[in-house]
Image 1: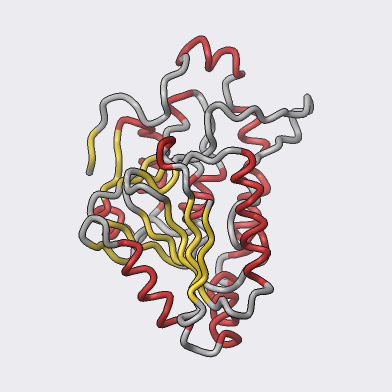
Image 2 (image 1 turned 30 degrees about the vertical axis):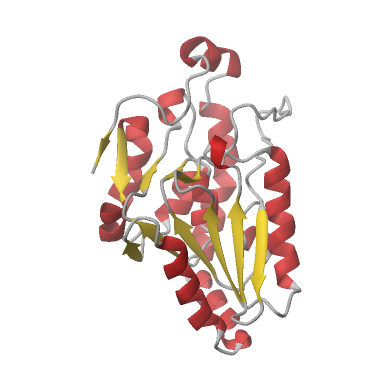
Amino acid sequence: MRLEVDKETGVALVTLDRPAKHNALTLEMAARLGEVWRELRYDDAVRAAVLTGAGGRAFCTGIDRAAVVPQPSSPYTIDDPLVAIGPKANDLWKPVVAAVEGMACGGAFYLIGESEFVVAGEGATFFDPHTTYGMVSAFETVHMAQRMPFGEVARMALMGTAERISARRAYETGLVSEVTPAGGAVAAAREAAAVIASYPTEAVQGTVRAVWSAKEAARATALAHAPHLVALGNLPPDRQAALFGDRGRGGGAYRVR
């Protein structure tokens, strides 16, 4: 992962840098993301941030399937390595703009869901593969329900890998605030972030807190239920392996709308 700070504009660029694996997150990357957001809290040279993925083929495809995440035996607890990867989970209230090129799926919604707004290149696609592979989409749907109409969130989660949402459709439903030509998302996001960073940071951060307070109570309540739903509804790992083997989460035929 790369962190670059433009001290002239006050904008930090955070890049998930694992393009050969579609920027899937390792446990080490997940931990580093939390560290980066906490570092930016105390860096007065940074007044806004842009988050993107390297390579252009994917923004992020969630947790790496090879990651081994030990789980407690109690059905009332679940260890989710992605639960603290977002800026808000780390108490960062400097605005974050997500710049999406290529695929954004599954665990990517933890990051998109805690960004202030999303800029997407024309070729970006959004989808949620969980149900296809016998897993509950809980945290992801909670995050997206704050940004998209109920029916669109339900359709995306339930259709799994069979359907992907185009950048244009994401714009129409409110998930994306701006669509750029392919490859232009980072430049547009940095331009917007630089405008925001030019304003007094106290006023900006207060505005961010005000916007989030409008929905925080409902979001917190919903997220509190998510671990139990995952523990109850996920197929056991041995059944997932027997049914799906090593197939990638983004594979198979699909249609874009």
